[in-house]
Image (cartoon, rainbow, N blue to C red; front, side, top):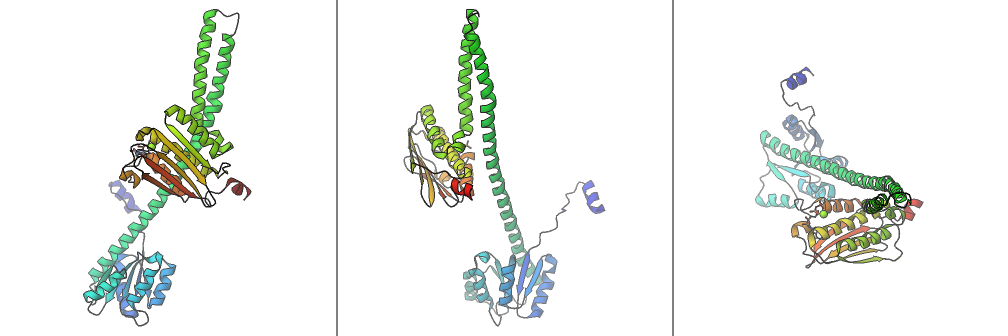
Length: 381
Ligand SMILES: Nc1ncnc2c1ncn2[C@@H]1O[C@H](COP(=O)(O)OP(=O)(O)OP(=O)(O)O)[C@@H](O)[C@H]1O
Ligand SMILES: [Mg+2]
C-alpha cells in the first residue's frame, strides 16, 4: 500500500491490475518431464496444467480455456500428432497454439506433417529453458491479446447497440415533445392571432398584421409537425411500417423531386416487433438521404417483401454508384449512416449488402422472420 502511494507521489504509473493469467496445458506421459517443464515455465506466472495422456489432455481442453498446449510428439496411447488432429477437429480449438516437444530428430517432412495439422511450433530435446519460455510466453501473450480484443469487441458491440436504442428513444421523445409541446403552444398562438385578425372593432392595420402573423405561425406549425414526424412517425407505432413508409416516401418524392417507386408485398403487410419496424424504417430513411446527398440519381425504388422466412428490403437508385471501399464496408469510407445500418441489421441477425449495380447503387437488407417476430406473436407470447 505504502509502495503504491509513494510511487503515485513520484508520478509513476502504477499497474494495480494483476496479470490476467492464461492456462498452459503440458502433455507428456512421463511425469518427470512434466515436472521439468513446470520448473522451467514457473517464472512466466501463468496457470500450468498437467496431463499424462492425450485423453486426459482432451478432457482438460474441453473444460478449460487453454492458451497453449505443450506436448510430446511420442506418447504411447495417442501420439502428439494424433492428439493435435483431435484438437484441431474441434471448432473451439482451431486456433489453439500447439508446441510439439520431440526427442527424435525432426526431419523437414515431420515438421510439415505437424504444420498441416495446424501446429504452430516445435522445440527439440534437450529443451533449452530460455527458448521454451520464450516460445510459450509469445503464445500466451498472443492469447491474452486476442482475448482482450474479443472482450473489447463485445463491449463495443454492446455500446453501439445501446447507442442506437438511446438514439431511437431520444428521437421518439423529441418528436412527441415537439408535437405536444411546441405544436400545441403554436396552435394556441395561432388561435389568438386569428381572434385579433377577425375582431371587427380592431383597427385595420392591427387585423392585417395579425393575419400575416397567423400565416407565419401556420407555416411554423406545419414545419414543426413534419420535423416531429420525420424524427419518429407516429404511424410507425400506431399503424405499422407499411403506412409509415408510404407516408415518408410520398413526402420525400415531393420534396426532393426524385421519381420514387414503391412496392410493399404482401398488400396486407403484417406487423413486426418495434425494433424490426424501426430498423427497416431508419434504413430506408438513411438510404434515401444518401441517394439525395451523394448519388445524383433521378429515380429510385424501394421494395419490401415479407414471406415465411425472411423480410427483404431493397433500395435502388440510378445514380453514380458507390466505390468498392463502401461496398466492402471499409471503416475509413463509412459514415454514421452505413455504419448504423450495419449495426442495426447485425443486431437482428440479418445481412446488409451494398452493391454497385452500374448504373446506381442497391442497398439490400435481409432479416430472418424468426428474429423479426411478428407483433401478434410477440404480444401473445
Ligand atoms: N446511394 C449512394 N450513391 C452514391 N454514393 C453513396 C450512396 N450511398 C452512400 N454513398 C457513399 O458512401 C459514403 C458513406 O455513406 P454513409 O451514409 O455511411 O456516410 P455519409 O452519408 O457520408 O455521412 P453520414 O454519417 O451523415 O451518413 C458516402 O459518403 C458516399 O460517398
Ligand atoms: Mg449517410
